[in-house]
Amino acid sequence: MKTFKLVSLKISHPQQQVRSQQIHLLDGLVINKEDEERKWLLEVYVDKEYEELFTKLKEEDQEVKVEATISRQDNDPASFITTIQSVAVMEQNMSILFNGVLVGKADMSEGILTELIDEGFQGNALLQEYKKRVDEKRNTGVKVK
Image (cartoon, rainbow, N blue to C red; front, side):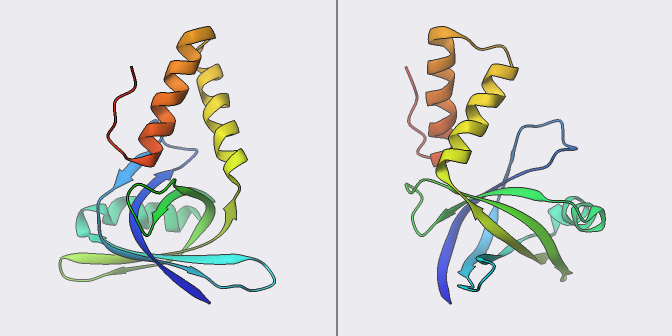
């Protein structure tokens, strides 16, 4: 197994109105289990304010797309398709354990483009919005012209 520091996390869920939600992390780990199923574990430690969201996602027992930035903030995010294995609520904070598989970067780009086309972007506007959203996923804070 290999363990990495989780520095940023966004989640997407088919039932949500918002395209993705940034989760403020107190701490987190990403573990490559290196097993036959190519599974990864993501453990996030967050404020208790997320209790309703993660409890609901766990109860629904549906796949949750997660974009995790590993090791350094300027790394490209890695996309995972996960399920929530556990939600442990403590006094002020909580721990969530995701189990999932890594989705390739090509899938991430295709997902962004599909989303933009569905939203009606075309031509130069499509290119500019694509660059903006890729930048958002990288969390660099650099503005696209």
